[in-house]
Length: 422
Image (cartoon, rainbow, N blue to C red; front, side, top):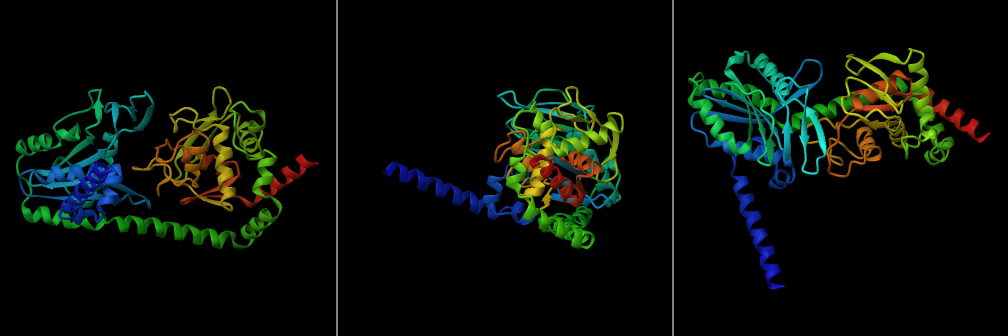
């Protein structure tokens, strides 16, 4: 018992010392996160470790974290770390993975393989950082040659494939960060004075506050909610009230109309009202169609090989557009009163159950119900295509941040339920 108390006391003292060290760090000044947030969140902890390494590099410099830059279409990009040094600007994309990493500069997606041989795809970080560089050069009005791209994987990663690596592009583990930056700064001429470094820092600083990002999301959601209220106030509220009284969620499940597929070959699931409407619309187009995603980009869809769902070049991972996924999407929307948060499985740091991927969001519900993703795990996100298909098939409205049920579909669902009973 005494030993146990000593161990606990030792842990508390260690935690407090680290907390004091963290409170004095410039990283906290930049981000404002408390120590517990940083040690719990892998992404933030990785940024903290990288920040500390950069702080030790010689030469005039300033560091910014989580820079959110506007793209001009209502969306933003997030840059993990911007290191402004007298020799140039270093854009760091931090990937706090473990396991093996395969990829090169030509592949749109790289492969992340764990020790249990489970594989996950993720967007090419070289391409991702190229986008970051494009927008930061536009904002700062500087020569792109002054900027270097650094992809930083955790110490737990083994980069198995030789990837694009040049004077201005590096893909490294975090333990090589200091060495890599020091070599680059040593071999590069000084181009920025301290005044210029401060000026660039001051230009980017307003885009770094986390609260700014949160406010942006909240404003977008408020605007979307207001639009929904204005457009659907009377009819939508009436139909939802009618649904609550006449079409209980329990009754729908009992009649198998939108119950997610328990077995991918289940005949009942392949013939739910949701699936029938999608099939009817696709069959009317000859089995192939080009639909529009939320931002208007074209997206080709067709039946998959076994007709257990759909396929699309936009979704390279298999078994993401199964009939079960569409049923689950509609189920969670109805279960949330006709309107559900989309969720963002593709966002950095998204884990089932956190603010980016809530369990009752559409992507969170599909991840758990269909793909067996557990609390705290990451998931591949095909929601952006699923939302567009449900809108195209006149089942849901694909709106900013939310997926809402179409009142006409609820009426059709009620008629379908009555016909089953009769």
